[in-house]
Amino acid sequence: MISYQLKGHSLQNDVQTMVQVFYANEHYALVEDVATEGITVKSILENGTAEAVLFLDGTKQRAWSMEYLEPLTPKESRRLVKRTIYELLKAELRIRPQWGLLTGVRPAKIVSTLLADGASDAECFRYLTEDYLVMPNKAELTIKVAKAEQRILEGNSDGDLSLYIGIPFCPTRCIYCSFTAYPLKQYEKRVDEYLDAMCKELDFIGDYAKDFQMKNIYIGGGTPTSLNEVQLERLLKKIEELFDTSDMEYTVEAGRPDTITKEKLRLMKAYGVNRISINPQTMNEDTLKAIGRKHSVEDIKRVFHEARELGHENINMDLILGLPDETVEHVERTFAEIMKLQPDNVTVHTLAVKRASRLKEEFDQHQMTTAEILDKMLVVAEDYAKKLHMEPYYMYRQKNMVGNFENVGYCTVGKEGAYNIQIMEEKQTILAVGCGGSTKTYDAKTDKLERIFNVKGVEEYIARIDEMIDRKRIGLGGLK
Ligand code: SF4
Image (cartoon, rainbow, N blue to C red; front, side, top):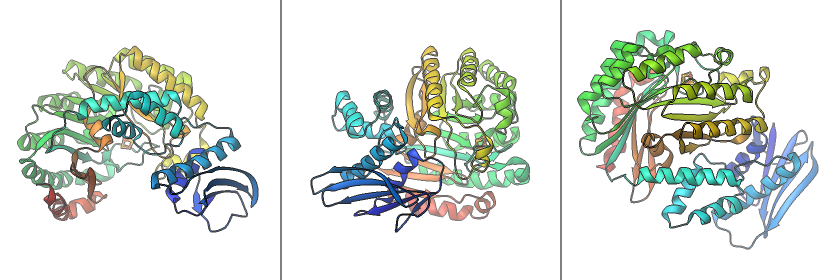
C-alpha cells in the first residue's frame, strides 16, 4: 500500500497518477495523517512553496521543493504538484520516467492542440522536454504522431460520424484482458438474441445517421469473428442495408486466429470490409499458451496468408511487449516472423496490468519485464517498423503499463487507421452499439464531448435494448 497526503490543495488525481508512475501496481490510499507503516508521499502547495516529502514507517526520508509566484492557474498548480513528486521519487528510486510529468492517455493530443494554436515543432519540443520533462526521443515521437494525426483530422467536416459495433464474445479469456469480453461457450445460446438487440440498435443509428456522413465503421470486441459464419453474415448484411460503405474505412478486428475461417474472410471482403486485424500479440508458442490463447504461431501465419489470397489489402497486427516471461530475444523473434508476413499496420502495445485481469491476481507467479528491458524491446519494435517502411501514426498510454511506456500504431504510407485517430483525438462523434458501448458526441463549437453509455452485461443489454435506444435518442437529440 502506498499512502499519500495533500496539504494546501485537493489535486488527488494528479498526486496519485504521479506516484503510480514510480510505484506501479500497488494499492493507493489518500490519508489524513502520515501512515505509521509503509510509504507516504506528502504533497504540499501553499504560501509560495510547492513541496513533496517522502516518509517511511512515519519517518521523514527526503523532501524536494520549489518556490512559485501567486496566483497560479489550475494547470500550473497541477504541473508544480507533479513536478515536486517527480523530482522527489526520481532521486529516491533513481528512476527517470521517460514521459516525465505526462500521465494522461493522449500525449499527442497535447501537441495537436499546440500545433493548431500555431506553435512550431521546436516550441512543442521545448514544451514537452522542459515544462513536462519528457525525454527527447518520446517528445520527437509525440510530435511525429501529432502531425500524422493532423493530416487525417484535416479531412474532418461537421456532421461526420464514426460507428463502433461491439461483439463482446471471445473463445477464451486472455490473462491480461480487462475488456467487456465474455466466454463464447457460456453465452453461445444467447448470441442470436444479442444480434437481434444489436440490429434494433443499428436500425435506430441507420435512421439517425441519414442526416450525417458516416466515415468509419469499426467492428471490435471481444472478438467479432467469434460469431459463426451465419451470424457474421447477418451482421454484415445489416450494415450493408443501413449504410453506404463504399467510400468509408470499414474495419473488422478479426483478432484471434482461432476464430477466423476462410469463409469469414471471404464474407468480410464481399461485404466491403477494407481493413482487418489479425492479432498474434506474440509469435512465441510458449507465451501464447501462457497467456491463454488457443492458437498456434502456424495458425497466425495460415490465416494471414489466406486473408492476403482473398484480397485483404490492409491488415493490422497487434503485438504486446512485456508479456510474462518474455525477453528481448522473444520480441526479436516475434518481429522477425512479422517481417516475413509484411502486414500494413503493426500496433505495438506495452503490457498493462489491469485490475480486472487474471494477470493482476497471478502477478507474483510471473517474471515481469523491467522498465529497462521494456525500453530495449521498444527499440526493437521501432527498428523493425522502419524495416517494414512504417511510420508511427497514433499513440496512447494507459495506467499501470509496465515501465510506464506507450502503445504506438505504425503503418505504411496511406494505411493509417483513421478510426484509431478519431478515438484518440476526440474531434468527431463516435456512436457505439452493443453492450459496454460508450457513445461520444462531439460539439465542435464548444470542443466538448458528452457520453452516452450502454449497459455492460449481455443479458442486461438484451433485456434493456429499448432503454439503450431511448438513451441515444435523448442524448443525440441536441446534435441534429
Ligand atoms: S481477445 Fe481481446 S477481448 Fe478477447 S479475451 Fe483476449 S484480450 Fe480480451
